[in-house]
Amino acid sequence: MAFIAVGIFNYLYYGKTGELPDLTAHLATYLLVVAMGAVAGISIVYSNIRLNAVISWRKSLGVRFLAGSLVQAAILAGIVLLGLELSKGLFPEPVSFETLKPEMIKLALLLFVLIIVNGVFDLSYFSFSEYSKGRLNQLKHEREQLELQYELLKTQLSPHYLFNSLNTISSLLDGSSEQAEQFIRRLVQSYQYLIASQDKKLVTVEEELAFVRAYLFLQKVRFGNALTHTISIGANKFSANIPPLMIQLLVENAIKHNDFSELDPMEIVIQEEEGNYICVTNENRGIVDEAESLQVGLANIQKRYVFFTDLPVRIVNDKLFSVSVPLLPHL
Image (cartoon, rainbow, N blue to C red):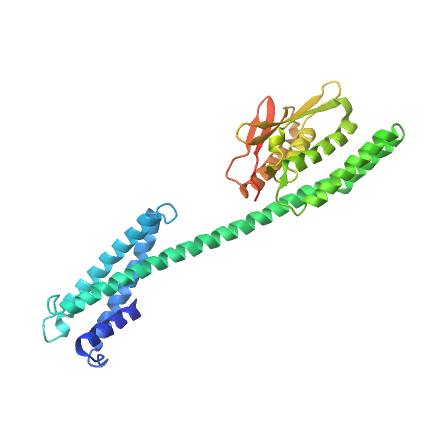
């Protein structure tokens, strides 16, 4: 602002006299102009800080732009009037608005342009800042998504999970070779899905349900009549999208964090819900030692959805425990 003030002074002086002012002869005037520019710059920066605290660019773009322009106009007008008053002793002839009327009109136009340019600069800075923040948040969420998905994949591909599956196959081979073949086919189907979805942000509901059915088949072989399930999802929902392993994780949580047996079986219900949601419900028989682990799992589910939508993950923890996750359009 100090440099701009000196430039404006030189322009006005040249427009009046046809020559540039002599620095030595007008040193006091130059110092006054520099001081006025510096005060104007500091005042505008401070006023912007205060305005940003009162009027948000994000919420009221037009109002913030207009308010900033009016405040800057008031600041610059006040400083110009103060400068006229202070400069009276610097010139042999009285200095006033009337004696400098043509120059003051030019100055007013220059300051008007300066205010508009400064307002556009502030708006551009805000836009770039918001874009940068948005991009950083997006990259942060993408990284969190990959980390959460990686943790799920590690769980499903863990040696412990594979060891249990191979033990089940071994026990089935002693009895029904047909059931053992079905188990192997579903196990292969599960691993194919895990490998295929590891680089995907979203999968279709149809793909996820095919994996969930294969997963439930494996668990049914393991738990027998102690575990039952019902899937009630209309075909019109199959093309909607969902984060991979989402429904399977909810089913796994129900199995992992509840106590059940053939004498006291548990049913898992997967159904569509009003508002374009899918809900996984089971009777609440929570194991105390697993409560903290369950909360971590639910927190991970909510974090995964933050990246895709503002719609909430709905959790009901009562006699029936249910988690409802929103379906998503194709990205």
